[in-house]
Image 1 (cartoon, rainbow, N blue to C red):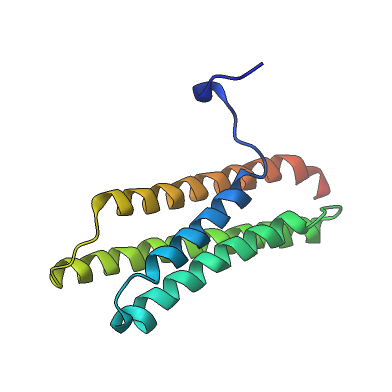
Image 2: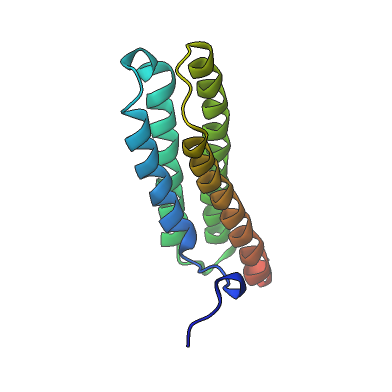
Length: 139
């Protein structure tokens, strides 16, 4: 039986799928930007978005059986979240640069990007919270 979309809970693996979407979206969008912004903005945004994906995959690949593994998993999730915040900062700069250059990017593109990033931040935060509960017996 189908569950109404407003009553669905997020899947444990949704953060991985969303991280993949962020990486793909970043590559697709940044490659359209003028080459003069490549080293200053585009490359950094792409690297951060790939880091989000890689840290999420690394965190998900850790089978936690002791405190050190729980800490390592949490560390990867923290690093993924740091990269999400770095992308937000870089996009803020990019938005100002494009507006000053007279070539603003459509609001729908920015909204889509920030929705992906906001969702990822919330998903990572939720996983960290559930992990703390799950692994608190490890010490």
